[in-house]
Image (cartoon, rainbow, N blue to C red):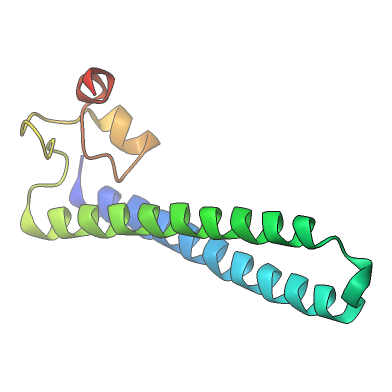
Length: 111
């Protein structure tokens, strides 16, 4: 894959994830304020579950951001598009679908 295209894809994916994280943070703060305003009218269990789901989503998004950052470093180092496990080329089609892919499809399937 051409470096310019890879840079565009990674930048777009990074912006998308950062936007989701920002939106999630805003929603979480709004939900906390709403729950505090409602006081005893809200089910504590629902609040706890919603908070745990939000934390899990945030963790998943932060992990994805870390994967994107590693891909951007590989792009700078000239190793982008190569499997981090085997060094084999990752097909352009896979990189178009997931610009931060670290492994070939076969390696993912192998586990």
